[in-house]
Length: 432
Ligand SMILES: [Zn+2]
Image (cartoon, rainbow, N blue to C red):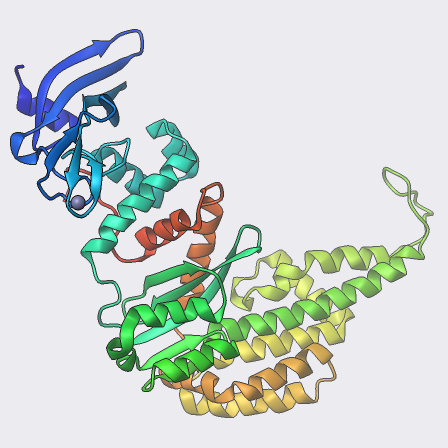
């Protein structure tokens, strides 16, 4: 076999003997017959220890390797079994692929890189694999990355958040590091058992080093943090506080919309096409339509509004004083987080008395929660945890959950989230 090192480099394999190369023209695939170098042979597939041989296993096996130009390529080799003292009878390790994987390391690494960089169809079409296979590959790539790094080391200020996926039916609990801005942990579920799982993993000593914990105000998280992290200041997450206000505002908008629809139902129906010039006005249905479209005008920060959305907001101000007041209350609360601490204390007190007297039930209720969480909200401002980390990571994970739709397990979703946001992004094979 000539040009052994060239073929090794082309196929992206190491510690591998290339016996011969053949080109199957009908199947349009290059088949590289290989074997592990003698030092790499007879090792346990799980732990890599040298073991006694057991049998020939299922005979020859193939592994997908990276395409060679436009042609697919596979490695073909024996897959004997060995007897490991710890793991029993297992398929022997191969130096070109992970245990139990059907793709080479270089293939896995490329898929993991692509999955964190590009769209679903780019990965599946370029690599010619199903999306579920992408899920399995990133799960095993992440397991390797995780084994090499202690992602819970040095945690001081953390944020705990829950994220819904599968159209809001399932949840992930996530933990972020406010200092490195990384996602450090994620697990399926949203119960106290899920949160406890994280603190158990962190261990007593490292729990004692946690100085700040931000969360969405859920009482059970508070209880656990109080029990496990004796030195931690508990702070409310500004992102969630603003979200409560946005939810309250949306409740008011929906109320106004329902009123308009009730009015619209009493109005004469119109046929298809352009209304006749003498048609009766239908203020209820017009109003319902406008309110439905006003959602984003009310949600967005005023600085980000388009001209059209500003017009909508002006229309609300002119025609629905209660909804507009609700909007001002939401905005009033949002800007508090941008103020310096002393100004924020004063502004929050003013906001609370304003909301208490506003006669909008959703905001009177919100005001009660704000009073309950006031020390936590002010602690967030005082300790500078209002940096939008949770908000931006939350948005990114949400995008990942949408991308991860179709993965078989939440583990694949978690692997993709941690590979993308955990600070150890995959690198393309052969690059530094
Ligand atoms: Zn073993």
